[in-house]
Length: 599
Image (cartoon, rainbow, N blue to C red; front, side, top):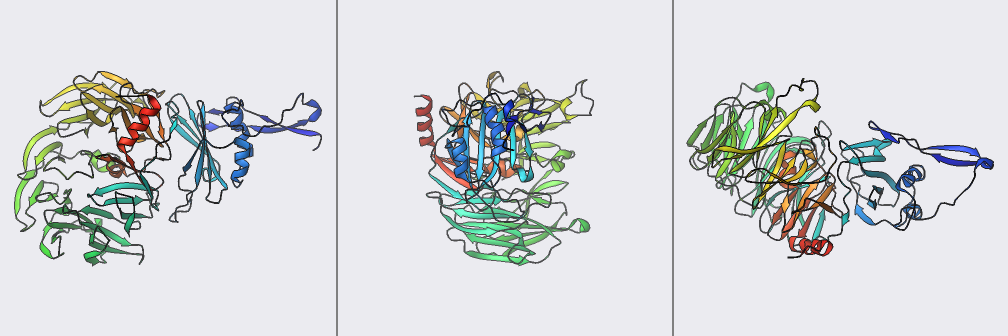
């Protein structure tokens, strides 16, 4: 072997059609080697002249799981940024394992090297700008090596310091509800189809992020609603991870210290349960199991302070509770025939809205369609609310049951709510190219509907979603691409630079939605919390140490709880289990310093 030398040979092309071709190590006679150059230290240092392609080849051979961080630093150089990594735990249901990710950035590629808390290499990941659709290619055991091809410019990391960061113990953190003194956070492992093992609810203080108490729900139901009084939260679970058995528990918990004020328990495993709040009352609906659909459901209403039963009655087996908070004036129950409003103090039916037509099938089978407006956890629910009743969206006055506006759905239409007045209407376009064989043949358009005028104002190509209005500009995602249009006529103002093909739909890249600042937009997008210039649409960068992500089948939690604003406070839930508070004022000051945006 002393007469042999190793030569790395890089395949060309090195990636194609979703496959990665790793470099090979060839052994050749030393006499056939014309020249040798010693590998310098710090090959990814800012002063290094070594190409990114060559670094990728070297790293694929020399960075293997288990090597120490000191070796990596000697080879690559000091990282530009160090961040908290994603969960390293690969065994389902086991505690989170967090380490550190070292981040190296160049214009033509970002390299992420992740270590365990003991400083041993666990994973590497390349992020590379690519043409066409965005995709991720994972290779090796347990995703040790991954390649992410994105169809936007690589975001430069921006250093913005948070006010505080509270680390949870599950993969995802969502802001569920808020009072002036307490934030309620839902933790979730992000699993589904038998892989979901844990969720929890915990309270933190907005002043410093201190955790006050926590409730475990295991893999069962977890519903929680804060009382409008601001001092209690009602929690419904149907599984006890401590006892390892199904157990329906309805609890009223004091927000300040987690003390249980009252609770009810049942070991009935057959019933499906859900809850809600109305004025001074707690609602619980126990529906029969699938095998007992000929039985009625039980609707019970309790005093929210004492837990005493106020009234109880049978309702249709398919009924659901549609209440959204303790300020709702009535108990709202919908079945296949009508939406009914019951007086919470007596059980008397106050009004009925008959359903017209059939509810669209996709509302039931498409778990990615959340329907309804985006809910701000810092704002109480309004007494006027859009609801999908039968085949139409209706804006109801919940105090009277009167319909204030309606939008009848036609085939292949989906509504994305912007606010009470404006609706985004997505519809599939029938074309001669659409054979029904492939989704890549599908074409969509989206229209802006003005409820006050009772008409569509304009339409654009693609699936528009996550609409936010600021002044005369509507910010949205067009097939998942950040876009700004004029509200009055839909004329494009800008679209973020990208290489996506026409048929790509990246709507699920964006959890939550836009936060509009004076000169900038913030939006969770893919793995990053992006900063976009409001005037030009230029992507300015990603905020450091904010790992974002989209958990399957958590569309409501993602949309409502990922990113929110209250006064000067910005709250972001991450995909490695943290809830983070920033100061809006400090963010804008820092961005102005970085990008010379004055005024």
